[in-house]
Length: 193
Ligand SMILES: [Mg+2]
Image (cartoon, rainbow, N blue to C red; front, side, top):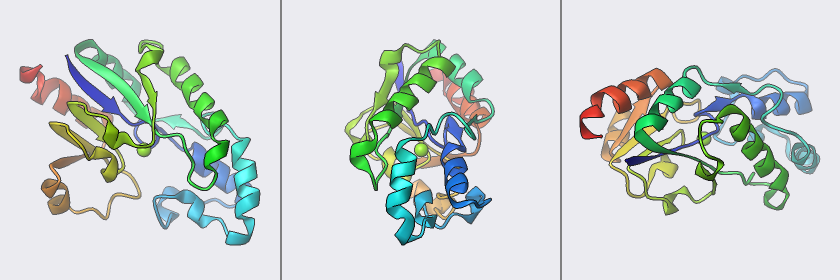
């Protein structure tokens, strides 16, 4: 069976981080208001430490978190003909030593929402380029580096500035939904399984 690694945040689920950011700031920001990949860049510098302490206590997979349409159904189908691994980073850049709870929350949420995947298929790593898989799906282009015959960039607020030509040069194809992934991996590529 071919191996697929699938990212979690902004690929399988979204919303929890933005929810906490808005709760902390008392704002109503949308994803499209973000100035960079790191939503926390919206925090004023003088409140950064307070934010780090606040965030370390929150569960990003509880309030405000939602599963992207089709993610669960399509991953269930993929697991029938591919080896599926959920590969997700858990270190939050400004507070790296306080991310143990965050890792635990991720693991618990994956176990609850994806009971058809064995927990040993959940991998928590920030340097995703260490991993070789046949197929990689991620919303961050740098996470698609390394060996893989198929690289799919999941469309997200922070990657829309990457042009089709740039993606083609890296051998990457943009996908905008789980139904598109289903089409590619279960229909187009089914001949090569
Ligand atoms: Mg992601």
